[in-house]
Amino acid sequence: MLINARLVQIVKDNRFYSSLYEGRDLEKFGLLPTIDRSLVNEHYDEICPDKDDTFSIATSGTTGQPLLVRWTNRDYIVSNMYTWNLRKKWYDITPTNRFCTFHVDTEYGMQDITILNGGRTLSLGKYNYSEHTLEKYVKAINEFETEWILGPVSLVYILLKKCISMK
Figure 1 (cartoon, helix red, strand yellow):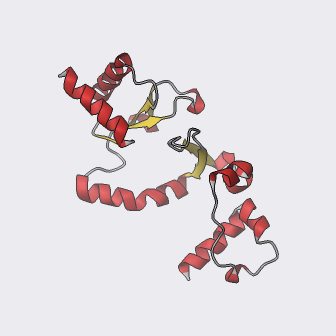
Figure 2 (tube, rainbow, N blue to C red):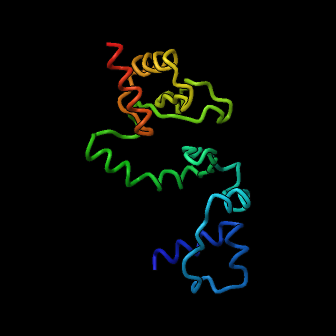
């Protein structure tokens, strides 16, 4: 019943789902329809929360085009709670540890090296991994005193190889 109550709340709070289920008994609606990238792009403003209460994070862009996804702070924290519990248990890291992550270079006009989240996150551009850029990123990771790295395995591997070759 808890899942059904949450789904009912989603339908009530979301313009896209509200329009789909208008006039129906929400207690009997079953599962919400599956959403794919084309549907999200077509109905983005209806599906995603209002911009004023949110921030955006881009998907990895593995299909060739990153998708900006809006999150409320609460939803983002709740969605990551399980992962953070495992990180704490297995690696003794918490959201307060300094870490490095990656961003799509075009997000909000961000520089290739950006400090976020009150100085606890080092964000590096995902593209343009020339020798010069790799050296600059390794230097930034060391100067930032990065405690852990969150990102695509391929990028972490490339940076680790460069780190080892620079020692």
